[in-house]
Amino acid sequence: MRQIDLPAQIDHLRKLGADFAALHTTVTALNVQPGSEMLQQVGPKILAIHELVGRALVRLSVLDGSQYTAVPGSRSSLETLSEVIASGSLAASQLARAVADNPLEATAFAGGPPADDAAVHQARHAEARPRLAESLTTAAHHLDLCATCCQYTAAGIARDLKDHPEHRSSLPQLTNAQYTALDKIAQGGARRYERRGGNRSVMAGDGSSIHATSFAVLEKHRLIRIDARHSAIAVQDVTVTAAGKLVLDTQRPGPTPSTSPGKAPAPSKPGGRRR
Image 1: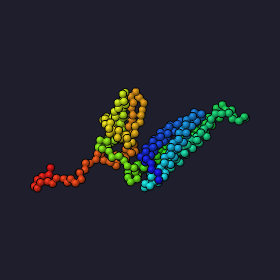
Image 2: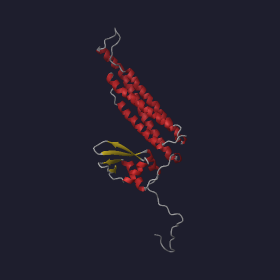
Image 3: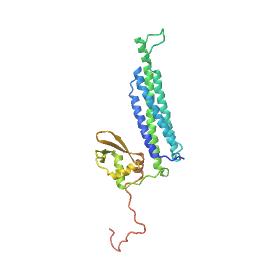
Image 4: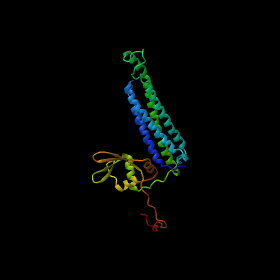
């Protein structure tokens, strides 16, 4: 049984779901106008769907045969991820159907109606328009289903790891300051600013600063994700990873000091009051 980084798989699936959702939005916004312009719009979407389906296949292959398959409830997650592959392929098929049904302007066989006949042109477009609209609507539906199934699978794995800690890898035990910093990032995000000279500062979404030492620990254990953006001053968005969310869900802020072994609490004096 292969040992894999399950929190990392959760992050991959969430990103995959977001990408399917974004593609669903673009397909929904396509303008159903038969002709060459529609071919130029639909073609790249088919390629994009195949790329996302390929990523879903990779995720399924990684999870299959891993330690996750021993977790109760894992079968439902893998079956849901399999549906992503099926629905994504159907979405690409529907757009391919639209390509086949889309009337392109070209010359017919000799003896047929002239290519520039306005009545023929209008009739071909009128006949194709409802078929194209139906194909695009069906493709969008399948893409929406893909996005939902990816997020459902990610949530299922996170829930399974929380409910069955014996199947997850060890998580770092954070101090009170580190836990508070992670919780701030989870609540409102954060940004890391890098100025000239290599000076860095991290600001939480609520406007408070995050200490560099705590931030370094969170980064070291991959509890946060840093996304770089280019600007005059380097600005990097910071979000919490699935591993970080697991730490927040399974730990409490700050360790409770324990009594030293062999040292019993001092007994109270007879007749005295405890303070």
